[in-house]
Image (cartoon, rainbow, N blue to C red):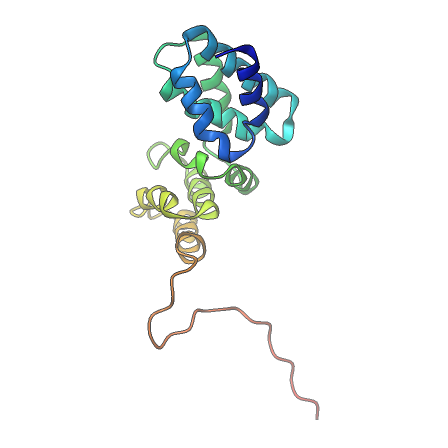
Length: 184
């Protein structure tokens, strides 16, 4: 992999269609090339605040494909990813969800999470939706904490199966504005 290849990968890493390409490049690169690619992803994350979450989390997802890596680079990527996980507020959950399905494999829990963190993890997965999100949500199904239960219901009802038809004879609940009283 040449310097230009690293540049192309880093320039396109914000695009989720490049996730697998970047991961594959990390997996097939020589040790020094892999370190350079991950360092440049971190550098781009520093210079592009809007893309920061996506780039840091992509680099973290690449670590599983990097059996040999400079320990300093691995440590930097892991530390930066830990700053983002688990989400601790609704805003953080929504920001992580915008990164897309890449986040799902990095979401922790339920062990070791506070009620708020667990609820935010479920919210993140629910906002992403799809079958992969179902796996994350399923891990929390035994959690009895009120905030988590609310998020489980919301995730299941709105995002995990958004196209599932209601049971025969039933209509989905849709809140409506109160009707105004008829004029006298």
